[in-house]
Length: 390
Image (cartoon, rainbow, N blue to C red; front, side, top):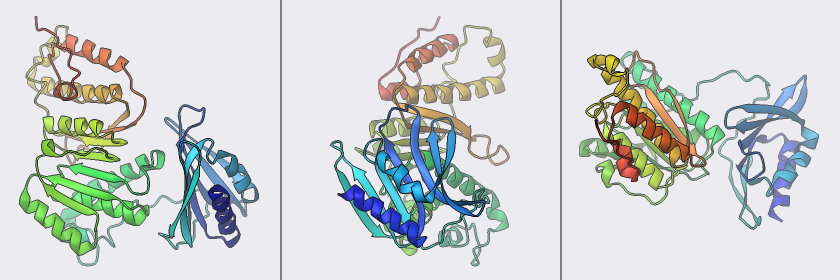
């Protein structure tokens, strides 16, 4: 059976010291908040161990298991609690998949990394993204010919580095499969799109298909030519309005600094395409500010223009987050880049989860308090509950 063969390859990698890491995903067990398990080799008090990181929705739990009982501890989890297991070694990579009937299928491919695993228990934090081997950064004016970040490229590179750090963190807890389909709406000159493809393919060993959507034909032509020069075969750019783009199924949808309602269009596209992950960093906010007419004491605060603008931003993104929760996503809101780089620095990250119908009532309450008729994303999703103005 394929699951027995998978364990055989695991034991061989432990004996040969070629084991690098193992990930268990597609959890179907009884613990409602458990997402996946990430396993790597460590050395504790000069003894080789396996470190198991149990990723939950709000916390991580680490357990160390002796190498000689590693396979024995893993076996009962395969096919019963986890329907996917990915074993990475310096000789080959193995993927064990179970269907709904728990029939196993083993896939084997050439190893993506020949590196010897780092065994220190407390790993030194390293940069998630390195500019040294990213030739496209030179073409984009961020690095020189030696791969060093130029003075004028420092801000953009810090943004790229933070972006990849966030993506890495999200994918550790919410893997999207070995061949993810990703769309970046409003890709612009492609700084972040190129870095994302490079990271997924060359750092995580995935085989991504990434499409950048951008209105300006000259930027699309530039990016497609650069992707070809870099050998990024499954990275492409299309010249079109994001409203026109359609996809039946996506693993990840990204829209960074899409202006005004373009962010709402992107979120709606992601929800309809059943994207496993939706990541947006909203830009300007106009649609709600025109409607705001608070019926509470907030009217005394929003009568000041700058405060009205900031309140409109909070309401716009807050309702976006609630609508994503109502449509089956667990949402986090965090700072994308520091305010010294851009004042529009929020990022909304939604990952597939159970729908929260209660979120719709919360939205209705907020709209009533601020005299809001509709949020554009409601209209796109068909969930508008109109509140009459007094």
